[in-house]
Amino acid sequence: MLEYIFEPSPRAVLDFMLPYYVQYQVFQMILDARASEHSARMVAMKNATDNANQFIKDLTLEIQQDAAGQHHDGIARDRDRPDGGRWLSFHESSENNGRHPARTTAKPNLFCGLVPV
Image (cartoon, rainbow, N blue to C red):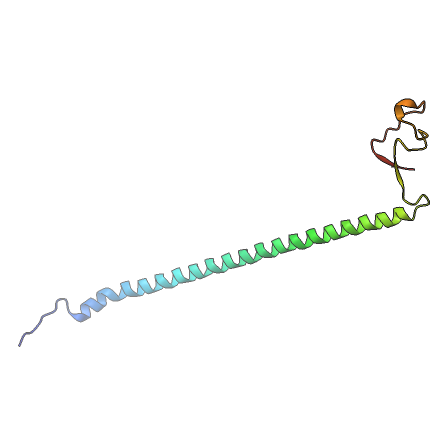
């Protein structure tokens, strides 16, 4: 029968390898913990970004709705004016008596657009 002789002894191998094995296991736990923390931070930042984008969309929509409401309120307010909300160009304003500004003796109207009558 054959006999084998192992050197160093199993006890010596275990005494030599055990500290490395424990060190490796502790290092692996630290790496897992850091990877888990990094993943949690990434998820939190993605959620924060998504929430901020949704908040921006909500505020934009609210501002647009408010602006549209003010526009419609302004139309209704103009419609209720005594002149029926009619806006005239400076050519039609009473100051020019319906004549072209170059053909009138009145002072030129400084408004370059629509002016209320």
